[in-house]
Amino acid sequence: MTDPLTAGGQHYRGDDWYGDDLGAARFTDCTFTDVDLSEATTSGATFERCTFHGGRFNASVHRATAFVGCDFRRTSFFDATLDGCKLVGTVFSECTLRPLTVTGGSWLGVTIRGANLSRLDLTGVDLREADLSMSDLTLTALTGARLDRAVLRDTVLDRADLRGASLDGVDLSAATLKKTQLDLAGAVLLAELHGAVVDP
Image (cartoon, rainbow, N blue to C red; front, top):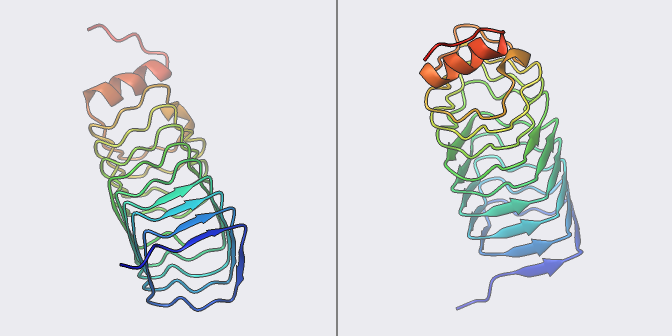
C-alpha cells in the first residue's frame, strides 16, 4: 500500500494533475498557482493553510476532505463535488462555485463574498459564522443548514429555502428577501428584527 503524499511549504506552478487520485494526501502551507486538478479525486485528504491562485477543480470529487484556513482566488469549481468536506476558515475570492454538488460538511467561518451561489443545494451544511455578504443565493436550498451568526449583509435570498435552518444571531433584515421560504421560527425572527412584538 502506497503512503499518501505529504508536502509542506511547496509551491506548485502550472502542474497538470488532471484526473489524479490524491487519496488522503496532506498539504500544509503550500501554494498552488494555475494547477489543473480537473477530475481529480481526494478521500480524507487535508489542505491546511494552502493558497490557490487560478487553477481548476472542474468536475473533481472530494470526500471527507478538509480545506482548513485555505485561500482560493479566481479558482474554478465548475461541476465539482464536495461530499462531507470541511472548509473551516477558508476564503473564496472571485471563484466559480456553480454548478457545485455539496453533501453536508462543515463550512464554519468560511468567507464567500460577492459570489454567485444561486440554485445550489446547501441542505444541512454547517455555515455558522460564514460571511456570505453581497452573494447571490437566489433559489438556493439552505433547508436545515446551520447559519448561526452568519453575515448576510446585502445577500440576495430571492426564493431561497431557509426552512429548518438555525438562524441564531443572524440579521435577516440586512439581506434582500423576496419570496424567501421561512418556517415559523424564521418568520418570528424576521418580524422581531423589524420591530414587531411577537405574542406567543
